[in-house]
Length: 108
Length: 118
Image 1 (cartoon, rainbow over the protein chains, first blue to last red):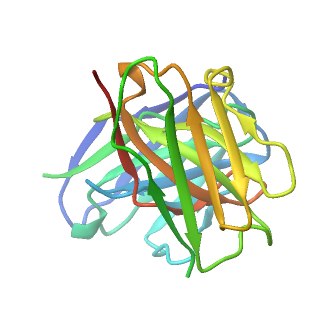
Image 2: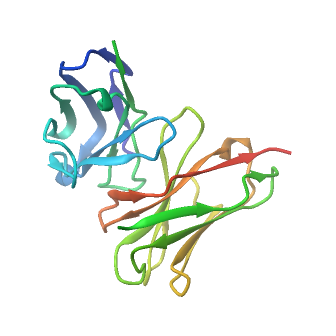
């Protein structure tokens, strides 16, 4: 199993600042088959990024993904109040198509 | 707009079988795409359970494979999950979701909380 480790566990920032979230895989993720999801309390996850860097339909351009191999990053610039949530990465290169444990982005 | 809705009993007794159905509206599941189940224990992360295509065999998370069955009913535009021999560790919010062949989930149901308790 390709284990995904997300860091930090929690990050506290203010609106207008930028956030950098990390997702590190225990094995290389082929073809950059990595996605990012946003989840707010009581809601289902929402797809933000796929293919490591492609924005899903409706994802604002202040969200960007990068990385390859084992190291991936989700960057959110100019944080808006609605961006404070939990973010999960998911690898879909090899079964089981698992998720990281998440990073909670909270308002400082 | 594609919509998915989970349904099933909210409480299941230990050692019994958990059964959930996902009803899809706004899209015919026999047309394309893959249909899957993901769960999330309270306060924890997400776990992929399995996925099915309308004309293919389902595939499962190896950690659950011995207990899971996913099936599809194109006439009802539904797909279902069965998880046998449940324990308290199976208590979770269960989501149904749509993906492409690549297992990227772009549409999700609202989730159904299933509690395993006597």
